[in-house]
Image 1 (tube, rainbow, N blue to C red):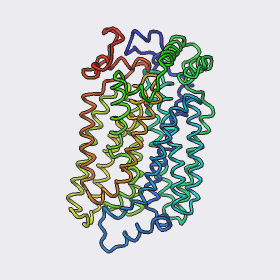
Image 2 (image 1 turned 135 degrees about the horizontal axis):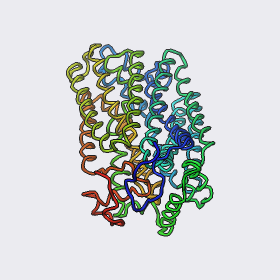
Image 3 (image 1 turned 90 degrees about the vertical axis):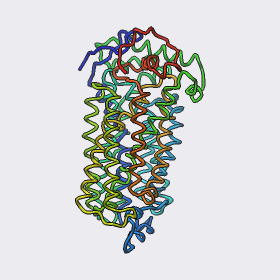
Length: 512
Protein backbone atom coordinates (compact mmCIF):
# COMPACT_ATOMS: atom_id res chain seq x y z
CA UNK A 1 0.00 0.00 0.00
CA UNK A 2 3.03 2.25 0.05
CA UNK A 3 3.66 4.75 -2.66
CA UNK A 4 1.20 6.45 -4.93
CA UNK A 5 1.08 9.70 -6.88
CA UNK A 6 0.33 13.15 -5.60
CA UNK A 7 -2.95 14.81 -6.36
CA UNK A 8 -1.24 18.19 -6.08
CA UNK A 9 2.36 18.24 -7.22
CA UNK A 10 4.01 21.63 -6.88
CA UNK A 11 3.72 22.60 -3.23
CA UNK A 12 4.21 19.18 -1.71
CA UNK A 13 7.17 17.60 -3.50
CA UNK A 14 8.97 15.07 -1.32
CA UNK A 15 6.22 14.54 1.22
CA UNK A 16 5.37 10.93 2.03
CA UNK A 17 1.94 10.31 0.58
CA UNK A 18 1.07 6.68 1.05
CA UNK A 19 3.42 4.75 3.34
CA UNK A 20 1.64 3.02 6.21
CA UNK A 21 3.59 2.12 9.35
CA UNK A 22 2.57 0.01 12.32
CA UNK A 23 2.89 3.08 14.50
CA UNK A 24 0.45 5.16 12.45
CA UNK A 25 -2.04 2.27 12.45
CA UNK A 26 -1.92 1.92 16.25
CA UNK A 27 -2.05 5.69 16.78
CA UNK A 28 -5.07 6.09 14.50
CA UNK A 29 -6.91 3.16 16.11
CA UNK A 30 -6.45 4.74 19.55
CA UNK A 31 -7.63 8.14 18.33
CA UNK A 32 -10.57 6.66 16.42
CA UNK A 33 -11.63 4.79 19.57
CA UNK A 34 -12.88 8.16 20.83
CA UNK A 35 -15.91 7.35 18.71
CA UNK A 36 -16.74 4.52 21.13
CA UNK A 37 -18.14 6.82 23.80
CA UNK A 38 -20.30 8.75 21.32
CA UNK A 39 -21.61 5.55 19.74
CA UNK A 40 -22.29 3.89 23.08
CA UNK A 41 -24.30 6.88 24.24
CA UNK A 42 -26.33 7.01 21.02
CA UNK A 43 -27.19 3.32 21.32
CA UNK A 44 -27.83 3.19 25.05
CA UNK A 45 -30.18 6.19 25.22
CA UNK A 46 -32.91 4.72 23.05
CA UNK A 47 -32.76 1.32 24.71
CA UNK A 48 -33.13 2.44 28.32
CA UNK A 49 -36.11 4.63 27.37
CA UNK A 50 -38.06 1.46 26.53
CA UNK A 51 -37.23 -0.25 29.86
CA UNK A 52 -40.27 -0.30 32.15
CA UNK A 53 -38.33 0.08 35.46
CA UNK A 54 -36.52 3.13 34.04
CA UNK A 55 -39.75 4.72 32.82
CA UNK A 56 -41.52 3.87 36.08
CA UNK A 57 -38.83 5.61 38.14
CA UNK A 58 -38.28 8.71 36.02
CA UNK A 59 -41.03 9.06 33.38
CA UNK A 60 -44.26 7.40 34.65
CA UNK A 61 -46.45 9.51 32.33
CA UNK A 62 -45.13 7.51 29.36
CA UNK A 63 -46.30 4.26 30.95
CA UNK A 64 -49.73 5.74 31.66
CA UNK A 65 -50.06 6.76 28.02
CA UNK A 66 -48.98 3.30 26.82
CA UNK A 67 -51.63 1.62 29.04
CA UNK A 68 -54.50 3.31 27.22
CA UNK A 69 -56.91 0.90 25.55
CA UNK A 70 -56.23 2.14 22.03
CA UNK A 71 -53.16 4.37 22.03
CA UNK A 72 -51.90 6.19 18.94
CA UNK A 73 -48.77 4.16 18.09
CA UNK A 74 -46.90 7.29 17.02
CA UNK A 75 -47.58 9.21 20.25
CA UNK A 76 -46.89 6.77 23.10
CA UNK A 77 -43.38 8.14 23.77
CA UNK A 78 -44.17 11.82 23.11
CA UNK A 79 -42.78 13.32 26.33
CA UNK A 80 -40.69 16.50 26.45
CA UNK A 81 -39.10 15.40 29.73
CA UNK A 82 -38.12 12.08 28.19
CA UNK A 83 -36.58 13.76 25.15
CA UNK A 84 -34.72 16.15 27.48
CA UNK A 85 -32.92 13.07 28.84
CA UNK A 86 -31.54 12.42 25.36
CA UNK A 87 -31.10 15.95 24.04
CA UNK A 88 -29.47 17.59 27.09
CA UNK A 89 -26.19 15.93 26.12
CA UNK A 90 -26.08 17.90 22.87
CA UNK A 91 -26.38 21.33 24.43
CA UNK A 92 -23.41 20.48 26.64
CA UNK A 93 -21.54 19.04 23.65
CA UNK A 94 -22.15 22.26 21.72
CA UNK A 95 -20.57 24.37 24.48
CA UNK A 96 -17.64 21.97 24.94
CA UNK A 97 -16.84 21.86 21.23
CA UNK A 98 -16.45 25.64 21.09
CA UNK A 99 -14.20 25.69 24.16
CA UNK A 100 -12.13 22.78 22.84
CA UNK A 101 -10.64 24.72 19.90
CA UNK A 102 -9.07 27.30 22.22
CA UNK A 103 -7.94 24.69 24.73
CA UNK A 104 -6.32 22.63 21.96
CA UNK A 105 -3.96 25.53 21.16
CA UNK A 106 -2.75 25.46 24.76
CA UNK A 107 -2.69 21.78 25.72
CA UNK A 108 -2.88 19.96 22.36
CA UNK A 109 -5.37 17.60 20.72
CA UNK A 110 -4.32 14.48 22.60
CA UNK A 111 -4.90 16.13 25.96
CA UNK A 112 -8.31 17.33 24.80
CA UNK A 113 -9.17 13.68 24.10
CA UNK A 114 -7.95 12.74 27.59
CA UNK A 115 -10.06 15.50 29.13
CA UNK A 116 -13.11 14.34 27.19
CA UNK A 117 -12.68 10.72 28.24
CA UNK A 118 -12.27 11.65 31.90
CA UNK A 119 -15.38 13.87 31.89
CA UNK A 120 -17.38 11.11 30.23
CA UNK A 121 -16.26 8.69 32.96
CA UNK A 122 -17.71 10.93 35.68
CA UNK A 123 -20.96 11.41 33.78
CA UNK A 124 -21.32 7.65 33.31
CA UNK A 125 -20.98 7.07 37.05
CA UNK A 126 -23.62 9.72 37.80
CA UNK A 127 -26.07 8.22 35.31
CA UNK A 128 -25.58 4.70 36.61
CA UNK A 129 -26.28 5.82 40.18
CA UNK A 130 -29.01 8.37 39.42
CA UNK A 131 -31.85 8.62 41.95
CA UNK A 132 -33.85 11.44 40.32
CA UNK A 133 -34.29 13.19 36.96
CA UNK A 134 -32.02 16.10 37.96
CA UNK A 135 -29.12 13.73 38.69
CA UNK A 136 -29.83 11.86 35.48
CA UNK A 137 -29.69 15.02 33.36
CA UNK A 138 -26.59 16.33 35.20
CA UNK A 139 -24.85 13.10 34.24
CA UNK A 140 -26.00 13.59 30.65
CA UNK A 141 -24.54 17.09 30.63
CA UNK A 142 -21.15 15.75 31.75
CA UNK A 143 -21.37 13.08 29.07
CA UNK A 144 -22.02 15.91 26.62
CA UNK A 145 -18.87 17.73 27.68
CA UNK A 146 -16.92 14.52 27.14
CA UNK A 147 -18.39 13.90 23.70
CA UNK A 148 -17.88 17.55 22.72
CA UNK A 149 -14.17 17.46 23.56
CA UNK A 150 -13.42 14.13 21.89
CA UNK A 151 -15.54 14.73 18.78
CA UNK A 152 -13.75 18.03 18.22
CA UNK A 153 -10.22 16.68 18.52
CA UNK A 154 -10.25 13.09 17.28
CA UNK A 155 -11.30 13.68 13.62
CA UNK A 156 -8.70 16.45 13.19
CA UNK A 157 -6.04 14.30 14.87
CA UNK A 158 -6.77 11.45 12.47
CA UNK A 159 -6.55 13.70 9.40
CA UNK A 160 -3.28 15.22 10.58
CA UNK A 161 -1.61 11.90 11.38
CA UNK A 162 -2.83 9.67 8.52
CA UNK A 163 -0.81 9.35 5.26
CA UNK A 164 -2.49 11.63 2.65
CA UNK A 165 -3.17 8.80 0.20
CA UNK A 166 -5.11 6.82 2.82
CA UNK A 167 -6.48 9.68 4.92
CA UNK A 168 -10.06 8.76 4.04
CA UNK A 169 -9.67 5.14 5.13
CA UNK A 170 -8.02 6.04 8.44
CA UNK A 171 -10.56 8.79 9.16
CA UNK A 172 -13.50 6.42 8.68
CA UNK A 173 -12.17 4.63 11.75
CA UNK A 174 -13.86 7.25 13.92
CA UNK A 175 -17.27 6.42 12.45
CA UNK A 176 -16.44 2.70 12.67
CA UNK A 177 -15.91 2.97 16.42
CA UNK A 178 -19.13 4.98 16.71
CA UNK A 179 -20.84 2.02 15.05
CA UNK A 180 -19.11 -0.44 17.41
CA UNK A 181 -20.31 1.65 20.36
CA UNK A 182 -23.90 1.69 19.08
CA UNK A 183 -23.91 -2.07 18.50
CA UNK A 184 -22.37 -2.83 21.91
CA UNK A 185 -24.95 -0.62 23.59
CA UNK A 186 -27.82 -2.33 21.78
CA UNK A 187 -26.54 -5.77 22.83
CA UNK A 188 -26.20 -4.65 26.46
CA UNK A 189 -29.70 -3.17 26.39
CA UNK A 190 -31.07 -6.49 25.14
CA UNK A 191 -29.27 -8.38 27.91
CA UNK A 192 -30.40 -6.04 30.68
CA UNK A 193 -33.91 -5.10 29.47
CA UNK A 194 -35.80 -7.47 31.79
CA UNK A 195 -33.76 -6.84 34.92
CA UNK A 196 -35.09 -4.55 37.63
CA UNK A 197 -31.94 -2.43 37.60
CA UNK A 198 -30.94 -3.23 34.04
CA UNK A 199 -31.04 0.45 33.10
CA UNK A 200 -28.39 1.19 35.76
CA UNK A 201 -26.11 -1.44 34.24
CA UNK A 202 -26.65 -0.08 30.73
CA UNK A 203 -25.96 3.52 31.71
CA UNK A 204 -23.14 2.71 34.13
CA UNK A 205 -21.24 0.50 31.69
CA UNK A 206 -20.51 3.63 29.66
CA UNK A 207 -17.41 3.86 31.86
CA UNK A 208 -15.92 0.91 29.92
CA UNK A 209 -15.56 2.59 26.49
CA UNK A 210 -14.52 5.80 28.26
CA UNK A 211 -11.79 3.94 30.15
CA UNK A 212 -10.60 2.19 26.97
CA UNK A 213 -10.14 5.37 24.95
CA UNK A 214 -8.75 7.39 27.87
CA UNK A 215 -6.18 4.72 28.75
CA UNK A 216 -5.19 4.34 25.09
CA UNK A 217 -4.73 8.09 24.66
CA UNK A 218 -2.09 8.06 27.41
CA UNK A 219 0.24 6.12 25.11
CA UNK A 220 0.07 8.20 21.92
CA UNK A 221 1.84 11.46 21.10
CA UNK A 222 0.13 14.62 19.99
CA UNK A 223 -0.20 15.21 16.23
CA UNK A 224 2.80 16.87 14.52
CA UNK A 225 0.62 19.81 13.43
CA UNK A 226 -0.55 20.46 16.98
CA UNK A 227 3.01 20.25 18.30
CA UNK A 228 4.29 22.68 15.66
CA UNK A 229 1.50 25.13 16.49
CA UNK A 230 2.75 25.12 20.09
CA UNK A 231 6.40 25.59 18.97
CA UNK A 232 7.41 22.08 20.06
CA UNK A 233 9.47 21.42 16.93
CA UNK A 234 11.70 18.64 18.26
CA UNK A 235 8.69 16.73 19.57
CA UNK A 236 6.96 17.27 16.23
CA UNK A 237 9.99 15.85 14.42
CA UNK A 238 10.03 12.79 16.67
CA UNK A 239 6.28 12.32 16.17
CA UNK A 240 6.71 12.46 12.37
CA UNK A 241 9.55 9.94 12.45
CA UNK A 242 7.42 7.68 14.63
CA UNK A 243 4.34 7.69 12.37
CA UNK A 244 6.06 7.96 8.95
CA UNK A 245 8.88 5.51 9.63
CA UNK A 246 12.59 5.95 10.43
CA UNK A 247 13.60 5.40 6.79
CA UNK A 248 11.32 8.20 5.54
CA UNK A 249 12.60 11.73 4.93
CA UNK A 250 10.23 13.75 7.10
CA UNK A 251 12.02 17.09 6.62
CA UNK A 252 9.81 18.33 3.71
CA UNK A 253 6.62 17.62 5.65
CA UNK A 254 8.01 19.20 8.82
CA UNK A 255 9.17 22.26 6.87
CA UNK A 256 5.70 22.69 5.34
CA UNK A 257 4.04 22.40 8.76
CA UNK A 258 6.40 25.01 10.24
CA UNK A 259 5.91 27.32 7.25
CA UNK A 260 2.12 27.17 7.46
CA UNK A 261 2.23 27.66 11.22
CA UNK A 262 4.47 30.73 10.90
CA UNK A 263 2.19 32.24 8.26
CA UNK A 264 -0.82 31.72 10.51
CA UNK A 265 0.93 33.28 13.51
CA UNK A 266 2.22 36.24 11.47
CA UNK A 267 -1.30 37.18 10.47
CA UNK A 268 -2.26 37.12 14.15
CA UNK A 269 -6.02 37.27 13.61
CA UNK A 270 -8.81 35.98 15.79
CA UNK A 271 -9.65 32.60 14.15
CA UNK A 272 -13.34 32.92 15.00
CA UNK A 273 -13.33 36.07 12.84
CA UNK A 274 -10.85 34.87 10.20
CA UNK A 275 -13.12 32.02 9.17
CA UNK A 276 -15.71 34.54 7.95
CA UNK A 277 -13.32 36.16 5.47
CA UNK A 278 -14.27 35.87 1.81
CA UNK A 279 -11.32 33.60 0.92
CA UNK A 280 -12.61 30.98 3.38
CA UNK A 281 -16.19 31.01 2.12
CA UNK A 282 -15.98 27.44 0.73
CA UNK A 283 -14.76 26.04 4.06
CA UNK A 284 -17.33 28.10 5.97
CA UNK A 285 -20.29 26.95 3.89
CA UNK A 286 -19.26 23.32 3.43
CA UNK A 287 -17.30 22.42 6.57
CA UNK A 288 -18.97 24.60 9.16
CA UNK A 289 -22.58 24.75 8.00
CA UNK A 290 -23.68 22.37 5.25
CA UNK A 291 -21.96 19.06 6.06
CA UNK A 292 -22.63 19.10 9.86
CA UNK A 293 -26.22 20.25 9.36
CA UNK A 294 -26.98 17.83 6.54
CA UNK A 295 -25.53 14.86 8.44
CA UNK A 296 -28.15 15.31 11.14
CA UNK A 297 -31.12 15.96 8.86
CA UNK A 298 -30.49 12.58 7.25
CA UNK A 299 -32.30 11.51 10.44
CA UNK A 300 -29.72 8.85 11.31
CA UNK A 301 -28.97 9.84 14.90
CA UNK A 302 -32.65 10.24 15.65
CA UNK A 303 -33.31 6.76 14.32
CA UNK A 304 -30.31 5.44 16.29
CA UNK A 305 -31.49 7.15 19.50
CA UNK A 306 -35.01 5.95 19.19
CA UNK A 307 -34.61 2.72 17.17
CA UNK A 308 -36.11 0.48 19.90
CA UNK A 309 -38.90 3.01 20.48
CA UNK A 310 -39.49 3.30 16.75
CA UNK A 311 -39.61 -0.45 16.16
CA UNK A 312 -41.95 -0.88 19.12
CA UNK A 313 -44.17 1.79 17.62
CA UNK A 314 -44.45 -0.06 14.30
CA UNK A 315 -45.37 -3.45 15.70
CA UNK A 316 -42.36 -5.15 17.29
CA UNK A 317 -42.50 -6.33 20.89
CA UNK A 318 -39.93 -5.03 23.36
CA UNK A 319 -37.41 -7.87 22.80
CA UNK A 320 -37.98 -7.86 19.04
CA UNK A 321 -37.49 -4.09 18.91
CA UNK A 322 -34.11 -4.38 20.66
CA UNK A 323 -33.07 -7.22 18.32
CA UNK A 324 -34.09 -5.08 15.34
CA UNK A 325 -31.91 -2.26 16.68
CA UNK A 326 -28.98 -4.71 16.97
CA UNK A 327 -29.48 -5.79 13.35
CA UNK A 328 -29.49 -2.13 12.31
CA UNK A 329 -26.21 -1.60 14.18
CA UNK A 330 -24.55 -4.60 12.51
CA UNK A 331 -25.55 -3.36 9.07
CA UNK A 332 -24.09 0.04 9.91
CA UNK A 333 -20.71 -1.43 10.90
CA UNK A 334 -20.42 -3.54 7.74
CA UNK A 335 -21.27 -0.53 5.60
CA UNK A 336 -18.58 1.58 7.30
CA UNK A 337 -16.03 -1.09 6.34
CA UNK A 338 -17.22 -0.73 2.75
CA UNK A 339 -16.49 3.00 3.03
CA UNK A 340 -13.03 2.31 4.45
CA UNK A 341 -12.20 0.23 1.37
CA UNK A 342 -13.71 2.54 -1.25
CA UNK A 343 -13.26 6.13 -0.02
CA UNK A 344 -9.64 6.49 -1.21
CA UNK A 345 -10.24 4.46 -4.36
CA UNK A 346 -13.44 5.96 -5.77
CA UNK A 347 -13.50 9.25 -3.89
CA UNK A 348 -15.76 11.15 -1.53
CA UNK A 349 -18.23 12.45 -4.11
CA UNK A 350 -19.08 8.98 -5.45
CA UNK A 351 -19.97 7.69 -1.97
CA UNK A 352 -21.96 10.81 -1.10
CA UNK A 353 -24.03 10.51 -4.29
CA UNK A 354 -24.70 6.77 -4.08
CA UNK A 355 -25.48 6.88 -0.37
CA UNK A 356 -27.78 9.88 -0.78
CA UNK A 357 -29.84 8.25 -3.52
CA UNK A 358 -30.14 5.03 -1.51
CA UNK A 359 -31.22 6.83 1.67
CA UNK A 360 -33.78 8.93 -0.18
CA UNK A 361 -35.43 5.89 -1.75
CA UNK A 362 -35.60 3.97 1.54
CA UNK A 363 -37.02 6.89 3.57
CA UNK A 364 -39.78 7.38 1.02
CA UNK A 365 -40.34 3.60 1.08
CA UNK A 366 -40.75 3.57 4.88
CA UNK A 367 -43.23 6.44 4.67
CA UNK A 368 -45.31 4.62 2.04
CA UNK A 369 -45.38 1.36 4.03
CA UNK A 370 -46.44 3.13 7.24
CA UNK A 371 -49.05 5.22 5.43
CA UNK A 372 -50.63 2.09 3.94
CA UNK A 373 -50.51 -0.05 7.08
CA UNK A 374 -51.17 2.32 9.99
CA UNK A 375 -53.54 4.81 8.40
CA UNK A 376 -53.54 8.56 8.89
CA UNK A 377 -54.54 8.38 12.56
CA UNK A 378 -51.89 5.81 13.55
CA UNK A 379 -54.33 3.55 15.43
CA UNK A 380 -54.21 0.59 13.05
CA UNK A 381 -51.98 -2.34 14.04
CA UNK A 382 -49.17 -3.09 11.61
CA UNK A 383 -48.73 -6.74 10.66
CA UNK A 384 -45.53 -8.67 11.33
CA UNK A 385 -44.75 -8.90 7.63
CA UNK A 386 -44.94 -5.16 7.12
CA UNK A 387 -42.95 -4.54 10.32
CA UNK A 388 -40.16 -6.72 8.89
CA UNK A 389 -40.36 -4.78 5.60
CA UNK A 390 -39.85 -1.56 7.57
CA UNK A 391 -36.79 -3.14 9.21
CA UNK A 392 -35.36 -4.17 5.81
CA UNK A 393 -35.85 -0.65 4.45
CA UNK A 394 -34.26 0.84 7.55
CA UNK A 395 -31.26 -1.50 7.15
CA UNK A 396 -30.80 -0.35 3.55
CA UNK A 397 -31.04 3.21 4.78
CA UNK A 398 -28.44 2.57 7.51
CA UNK A 399 -26.12 0.95 4.94
CA UNK A 400 -26.36 3.98 2.65
CA UNK A 401 -25.54 6.27 5.56
CA UNK A 402 -22.74 4.01 6.79
CA UNK A 403 -20.69 4.33 3.62
CA UNK A 404 -21.47 7.97 2.89
CA UNK A 405 -22.74 10.65 5.26
CA UNK A 406 -21.62 8.74 8.35
CA UNK A 407 -17.82 8.66 7.97
CA UNK A 408 -17.52 11.41 5.36
CA UNK A 409 -19.21 14.02 7.55
CA UNK A 410 -16.29 13.66 9.96
CA UNK A 411 -13.68 13.39 7.21
CA UNK A 412 -14.54 16.37 4.98
CA UNK A 413 -14.53 19.12 7.68
CA UNK A 414 -11.32 17.73 9.19
CA UNK A 415 -9.43 17.93 5.88
CA UNK A 416 -10.63 21.15 4.17
CA UNK A 417 -9.68 23.80 6.75
CA UNK A 418 -6.17 25.33 6.57
CA UNK A 419 -4.00 24.99 9.68
CA UNK A 420 -4.69 28.45 11.13
CA UNK A 421 -8.46 27.91 11.31
CA UNK A 422 -8.58 24.09 11.38
CA UNK A 423 -9.36 23.70 15.06
CA UNK A 424 -11.81 26.63 15.03
CA UNK A 425 -13.55 25.37 11.90
CA UNK A 426 -13.92 21.88 13.35
CA UNK A 427 -15.31 23.34 16.59
CA UNK A 428 -17.87 25.53 14.85
CA UNK A 429 -18.90 22.71 12.53
CA UNK A 430 -19.31 20.38 15.50
CA UNK A 431 -21.33 23.06 17.30
CA UNK A 432 -23.64 23.20 14.28
CA UNK A 433 -23.90 19.40 14.38
CA UNK A 434 -24.77 19.36 18.08
CA UNK A 435 -27.23 22.25 17.78
CA UNK A 436 -29.07 20.48 14.96
CA UNK A 437 -29.03 17.19 16.86
CA UNK A 438 -30.44 18.88 19.96
CA UNK A 439 -33.35 20.39 18.04
CA UNK A 440 -34.11 17.16 16.19
CA UNK A 441 -33.81 14.89 19.25
CA UNK A 442 -35.97 17.25 21.30
CA UNK A 443 -38.67 17.35 18.62
CA UNK A 444 -38.53 13.91 16.96
CA UNK A 445 -41.00 12.07 19.19
CA UNK A 446 -43.40 15.00 19.01
CA UNK A 447 -42.92 15.16 15.24
CA UNK A 448 -43.56 11.42 14.98
CA UNK A 449 -46.77 11.95 16.96
CA UNK A 450 -48.03 14.79 14.78
CA UNK A 451 -46.52 14.08 11.34
CA UNK A 452 -46.77 10.28 11.68
CA UNK A 453 -45.37 8.63 8.52
CA UNK A 454 -44.74 12.13 7.12
CA UNK A 455 -41.72 12.33 9.45
CA UNK A 456 -39.82 10.06 7.06
CA UNK A 457 -40.82 12.18 4.07
CA UNK A 458 -39.42 15.18 5.96
CA UNK A 459 -36.02 13.51 6.22
CA UNK A 460 -36.28 12.19 2.67
CA UNK A 461 -36.71 15.74 1.35
CA UNK A 462 -33.57 16.88 3.17
CA UNK A 463 -31.60 13.90 1.81
CA UNK A 464 -32.67 14.85 -1.73
CA UNK A 465 -31.55 18.46 -1.15
CA UNK A 466 -28.16 17.48 0.30
CA UNK A 467 -27.42 15.10 -2.57
CA UNK A 468 -27.98 17.93 -5.06
CA UNK A 469 -25.74 20.18 -2.94
CA UNK A 470 -22.89 17.64 -3.04
CA UNK A 471 -23.25 17.23 -6.81
CA UNK A 472 -22.94 20.98 -7.37
CA UNK A 473 -20.65 22.33 -4.66
CA UNK A 474 -18.35 19.66 -3.18
CA UNK A 475 -15.03 19.12 -5.02
CA UNK A 476 -13.09 15.87 -4.75
CA UNK A 477 -10.33 15.82 -2.09
CA UNK A 478 -9.18 12.21 -2.51
CA UNK A 479 -5.43 11.75 -2.11
CA UNK A 480 -4.53 15.42 -1.65
CA UNK A 481 -2.04 16.20 1.17
CA UNK A 482 -3.74 18.01 4.03
CA UNK A 483 -1.84 21.29 3.68
CA UNK A 484 -2.59 21.46 -0.06
CA UNK A 485 -6.33 20.81 0.01
CA UNK A 486 -6.91 24.56 -0.44
CA UNK A 487 -5.98 24.20 -4.10
CA UNK A 488 -9.20 22.36 -5.00
CA UNK A 489 -11.27 25.51 -4.53
CA UNK A 490 -9.24 27.39 -7.14
CA UNK A 491 -10.43 25.05 -9.92
CA UNK A 492 -14.04 24.67 -8.80
CA UNK A 493 -16.67 26.29 -11.06
CA UNK A 494 -18.29 28.19 -8.18
CA UNK A 495 -15.81 28.52 -5.30
CA UNK A 496 -12.94 29.90 -7.42
CA UNK A 497 -14.60 33.33 -7.42
CA UNK A 498 -13.96 33.54 -3.64
CA UNK A 499 -10.40 32.21 -3.61
CA UNK A 500 -7.33 33.99 -4.94
CA UNK A 501 -5.21 31.58 -6.93
CA UNK A 502 -1.82 30.95 -5.38
CA UNK A 503 -0.50 28.16 -7.61
CA UNK A 504 -0.19 27.66 -11.40
CA UNK A 505 -3.11 26.02 -13.18
CA UNK A 506 -1.08 22.97 -14.23
CA UNK A 507 -0.15 21.93 -10.67
CA UNK A 508 -3.54 20.41 -10.01
CA UNK A 509 -4.27 17.08 -11.65
CA UNK A 510 -7.29 15.72 -9.80
CA UNK A 511 -10.87 15.39 -11.06
CA UNK A 512 -14.09 16.97 -9.83
